[in-house]
Length: 467
Image 1: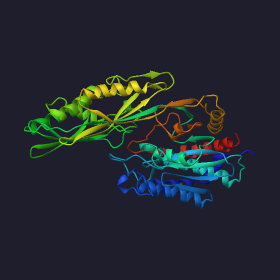
Image 2: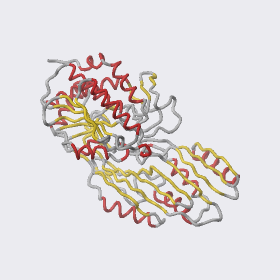
Image 3: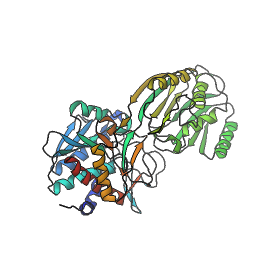
Image 4: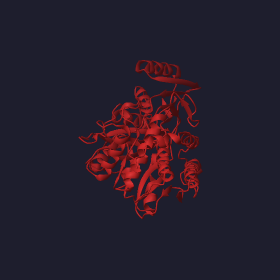
């Protein structure tokens, strides 16, 4: 039976958008201050998980909530299954949006809101793909399971919990990257460096410094509170610096304390070379001043080890290979207080065969020169599926059938849930040549692309179930 998958999606377009907009209105950012046994990642993420599972239950799917860490909705009766790995959590939405980030808005064929492309839109597309298979009454040899995680953006504890309780899928994909398909993903090293506070009470003092919300985002804003005897001179120097560097900055004054605010460009942490790190740009300015003690150590480390160096050369950890390209370093979160000390969190994306021990040793050595210590380091391995794997061929065929385009295999610096599974890849939903607005201001998905992705997923899931 020949099925017009695009036509089947078009019939359900209005419902798809309505259900997606309901999910997008939930500000599902990880917030452990509202964590409960029922909602371990916070109230709003729990609300988002409840929302998608309720949608599935209302459609007649079998659903299960796994202690608030993850949940699934499935159709079919087999023991083994095809898995679709999506997430309902999103990164914060700082900055000036054209329209509020949690009020979905359609402009010129694009749906704008935080999570539209990462990953609520693609996740809803995959859900509607499964819904179409059910509505058409198509026979499945393997059941299909939509798996929803809650902690993809900050540690993936959710999927590790899932795998502790449930068997891994026979085959699967995560709709959380690019089409045609990402068959190899970089690994990650997340490092937190800490520094003690300062006892200095004289001279220019860095009272507080902050920049960044998530390790996997390039910070778009930095704020430095400085105590100085010459506030006017410092304010003028900062304004000159911003003008010369083509940066936007603001200054405010209160007695002998001034606050410098500098704005950069937020992008996904897997491509720090494409952003402007507000934290590092601000600390580069502070390096031209005269501080002492830990204040200066904090600034010096940023300047000598991280400033405008997304490939880790200053840290001595640069490395590249032909499949996944170069290692990258994103300094994602800066916090500092003059008396309490501070920290810098690094999100390092590494290619195949990178030497983890060497990387940690070099960071430790460099950190020690400025009295930093490694407080925490976590590693996530690289992921690679052979190009001739039957699952890869099946997914390529589904993509080519719907689009008519060559299903070229891609690699990525971003880590998805697929990296935690033996036989899974990242599969859409960003199409070739399209702007990736993940983690950025005015995040969006093109509605036409959402429809096309749903059709691809429907055909792919049906064919995978018979593989």
